Image 1 (cartoon, helix red, strand yellow):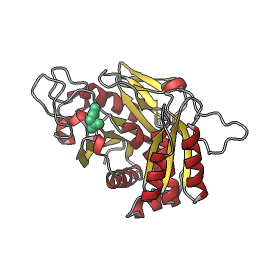
Image 2 (cartoon, helix red, strand yellow):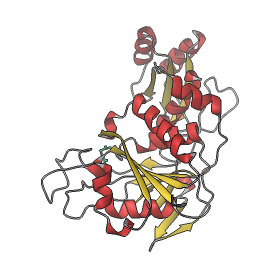
Image 3 (spheres, helix red, strand yellow):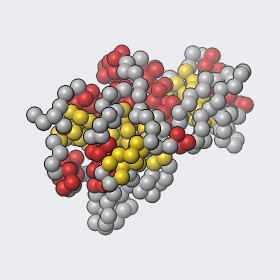
Image 4 (cartoon, protein in one colour):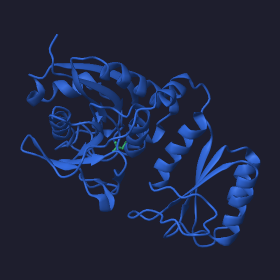
Length: 308
Ligand code: SIN
């Protein structure tokens, strides 16, 4: 058995998408198996690899059971002494949610590198093959750890990564934290620390055993927002709410009152911001708890909190 194995876990996405040859819209995501994706990249031919197809979906349809399977397969492979790191192929649309979920659940001491593509494999010039090569470079980089996202030569951390463009190949940003580094000519140029968090075996266990996941929704503050959406969700039995506030997490007065009523009934409510950069700065007298990450990641945290 080789001592430098990379495990590639396929979940679908545009990187595995197929469409009319030469076009980059109107394709179907999640069509090409992960082994076929790798066999189309001769640059990876000499690397000892194991492949598994965990799912084959468009990531807009990401589901909890896929997250569960992915976390389980990552945990299995990370525990193998000959495995250096994991590469996950994934759609771009919910990549940041999966990245944060895996970072929280696995807190891996080895690298788990999620990669993707903005163009399908059948495009005139697909970006997936280079992203795969760059993801392998990051996964094999000495000392790399934690859940990373690699796209268009940029290495992002799980906490900061966000999809920020609908079409551009360089579709991700890390906000004002900036990227962890770049992959340049087959090498990682590292700018800041790898993601680090403390493993919580009880949390991993709760995720593995969960049959029903909590119902957690995101509501957004906006001009004309009021109490109705929150009240309707509470009446329908939602288990937790993340509110994407305006600016520094500010809220329409009626919406805030509705959220406070919900909290009073025992519902967990977390306040984030719809701003792309910065985080909610807590002020004296704030009634609703603030969360430093983007609303979709605050939602992952709330899901895990309710699950545990
Ligand atoms: C997806 O998220 O699965 C489709 C879009 C993409 O990968 O760019």
